[in-house]
Length: 198
Image (tube, rainbow, N blue to C red; front, side, top):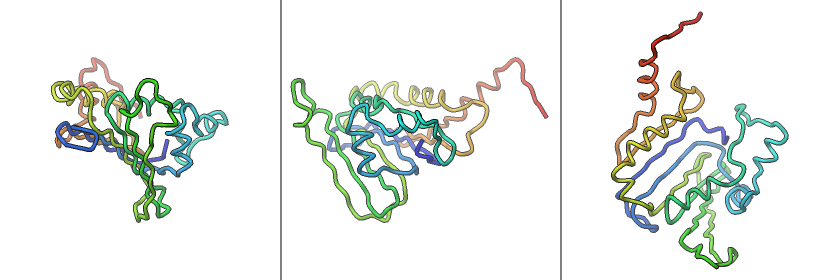
């Protein structure tokens, strides 16, 4: 819904980060986020401009419907890793960085006492966002079953009939490129009946 042309998913089970070992990075060349969009879309639970956008039946400039207006995705990052870092730019000459340490959310802590690191730096970066989950939880599971599971699950959200021209998904696992479109081709080849329409 950020009108990106591509998304790159990269999983590294051996890199050492401030959050621990392993990281997942999701990067796109979409619209990026302003400080207000970060505050409302990431730092406030269940407050999203997307909800109003959808309520008014609006579409993005590329005709897309916004998804994820409840904020469950951001909470999902907490299950995957110790920290989440967002680096984003709207192409306005400013790069915004947010770091959330999920381990600081101890039981009984008041939310206002949990620090969220936010900074802005001058940048010539193009529009886009990179979200990194640092310090993977269940690292052994990622190392044993991660590659196959990531490939199969990402392939399920891609149409088996054709690549969407306006949006491509690329993935790497421990430096190895994953062919997400090959599974769709294999699925088509197992069909007992095919149609060709003109």
